[in-house]
Length: 67
Image 1 (cartoon, rainbow, N blue to C red):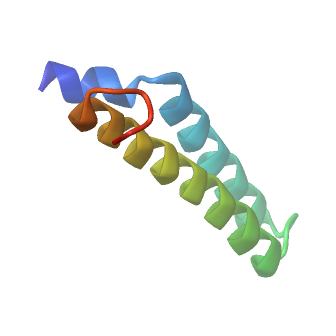
Image 2 (spheres, rainbow, N blue to C red):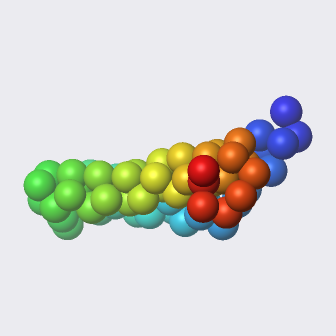
């Protein structure tokens, strides 16, 4: 449980959560359009999960190249 909490407090996770909150607020207020929100949110989430996937591959593979 502590490991999962520690991973959640990772800088990338905090940035992802903060950006998600900000863009949800902006979309709710009508400051950004739905199309802009989807584009930005998809980019942020894809980056987050891409880095998490790469990190997990490196941890399982034992070397830095993920092999």
